[in-house]
Length: 96
Length: 291
Image 1 (cartoon, rainbow over the protein chains, first blue to last red):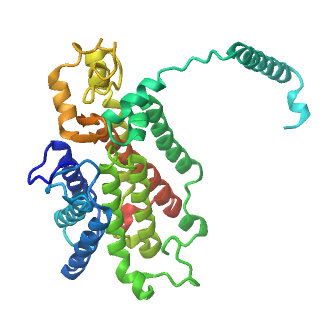
Image 2 (tube, chains in turn yellow, red):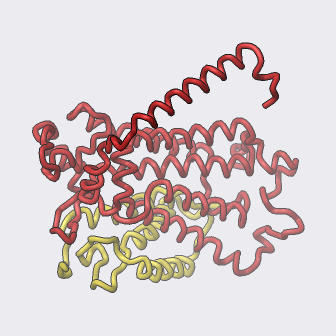
Image 3 (cartoon, rainbow over the protein chains, first blue to last red):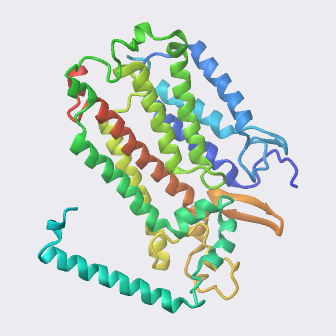
């Protein structure tokens, strides 16, 4: 068993998060219509709950990758993808 | 098939073909006699876990990378051919071009009169499904995810938006975008074979993982001098994780497998999304007029 580390042991723990964020931006630019701040808050909240349920990928050992303990971890890639979608949406703007 | 179809030259060709198959299969079975060539599978089964925790990803995108590449092409070409053959669209076929594609008056599915739950939870659900598809994609090497699954999940979000909101789908993927992303994905998958070809002579050799010169197989070290360190670092280091197994701890990497999965996902999103879009709205979509 490897102890929790504050920083990633290896890049493979961070790269999926970056990829999820970048692809989130890409597909976020395809969203149309207006989304209220309330709705954004709701979706971010739901994504955090989902991230706890999905857990961090296997063989990740750093806090940055979402690993907190053996029985509790967070899927940071999921939250990064959700945030990326909103960033992409912001690039496109709120036009109908 | 009618018996008339087998008369003449067609019948002769069919009989000869069947005889060849029968003789070939029979002699193969007779020659077996316990001497089945076991192939390379045992070695690869032993190696695959050291490449990616998800053994299936190693098999599908590394060991059988060519096969999957062609399958990916089949999906894209199949989508295009389907669109060309029967992609007139529900709206066009029914002759109600201004109506939402699957909204019938009896179903009362217009946004203005949507069920409150569907109206307010449609957008969050679509966004969360898209995020989930990206999670599945990024977990290709470490879990049961992958490009295929990502594409299918993403397309389901697209379809959900079409059903709920019609042409006001929040996930507004145009034909141009879908065709572009599908073609780009396929090209990315195919071109990821180039680095391996340039340094080893084998297309799609996984230069990042470089299993065959890793020393994990005794007696196989022929490629150790062929793959330069810079190539291993470029394609391997971004995906390197600490693999803790019962027989030790390894800093393994899936190499180009996660990148291939991104290409795969783009291709499947393009292909299936295009099928959904064109089957609903028709091949000659009036995107320009709507704008």
